[in-house]
Image (cartoon, protein in one colour):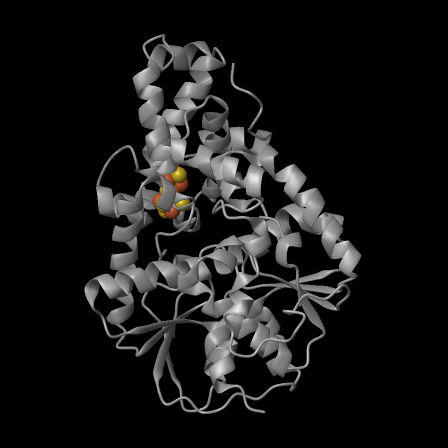
Length: 400
Ligand code: SF4
Ligand code: SF4
């Protein structure tokens, strides 16, 4: 019998599909692969049949030929479940408002409990258990990027008490390709007079990569530690440049931290702008914006980054055809880079091409993973378009 990974609402949702296939039409993973295993509606149907057969409902057992799926069928089901970025484009398109992303998470939980997840995710889990970060480096090196900055204070931005905690996240901390984002943001915070700290080795992975792997239970120890550290610092605000960390703290941690405001960096910059505390200078370029899935669709933050970009004098802001709730995915979410890097790369290339069609000089995004995926696709193609993060651009045009 399956364990209890599904809420009553989800069990009802499993039955609510009207087979319109809108989700399939909007799924970029399916668009790339054209494989029924990946098609969201078919995955939903297969999983529903499996659960019902296992729960012993006679009608569905008959539909399945009176048997539970065999090992190969289960393996195929798992392959499809992990060839998904959890971008939630399918959920945004579903006319029956089925919360498909939450269902995909519960399905992965169910599959992982049966040991059907990709082996690469075990490596990620073991790395987090041992090193407290997903890349398996000593966690003492979490703030090593500060050493490479031209000008950094003696305390390397690590203070015992502060009003604001900047939670950097594993990718921003350890991936040289995107360390320019935390570097830019600590400079932005310094120049705008924030009383802030980073947590260095005291910061542990937020648990998002394990949550999306279907290993939610692994988050608990991480959550307890991270919440305790923020309490010790006495922060009133936490700010994140990583949308996945932000989404995790918002949905999984926030109840433990009453009175602490959680902001993504785009919201933080927009707030300063709105309150008249900063001014942005000229940029004579055409810019466009890529909505990171975990910031836009999955956290509802669409307008603050656009407000910042529109306020830059001289910049021409253009929208890509599919934006906000229908925005494209960079291919870097849902642990897809671990499960199927080729598919992740194919999605990044298609998304890059769609942005190039806007004629923009610069793609601005607000996520280290999106920047890394689009930058890699750009380099592979030899494209001239520049890919940057909003905090890097904000620092570039920040006026004293
Ligand atoms: S979450 Fe994204 S990749 Fe996964 S099924 Fe939905 S649209 Fe496809
Ligand atoms: S969009 Fe919703 S209702 Fe339509 S096939 Fe997909 S899950 Fe079913």
